[in-house]
Image (cartoon, rainbow, N blue to C red; front, side, top):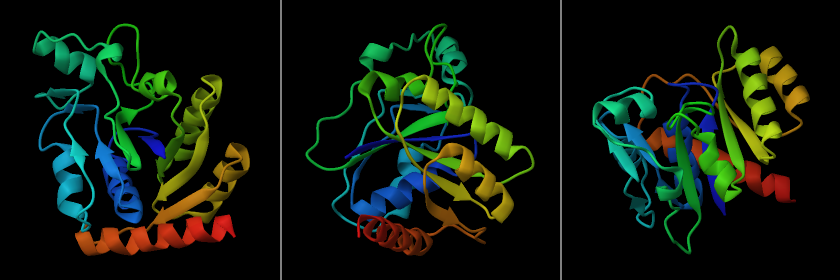
Length: 205
């Protein structure tokens, strides 16, 4: 299983969701493009508890915390989609994108093209705020336009009406709901990983 984790925007909880997925399945983890530090790979490493996960190095690690195409220009780097090669592993692999689906890599390609090029199924992180319905449905339409499989949505935050209308339009399951937590710790990640495993088991019954 290889899963591409994307979100409806920046700071939506994508790295937390990725850590939960990694912990739930003891999967490996890869962040193809990192812009700014500390890196999300370091965050995932600090949040998981299992000892089986391998965290692979980024294809591009950029210093400036901004859109990859802009950060790369500052360092005189050109991002090439063909150089973003999925690590070889016999284990499950969680691949975390950067920002939302249409964050540009360069003048012609976007973050979601990593999933499109490799025909990866997608898990979408949707955090709850005023306007998130529109942003979520626009993201889903772009995934459909590219022919990508949306495996499910992880909601970061809670609002029953928001979730209900999104799921009706998306025609895919909610695989996890993350509540507002006072702090994010390995124990919190373990708790949600356990909930996610139960959800997957129940879906397979």
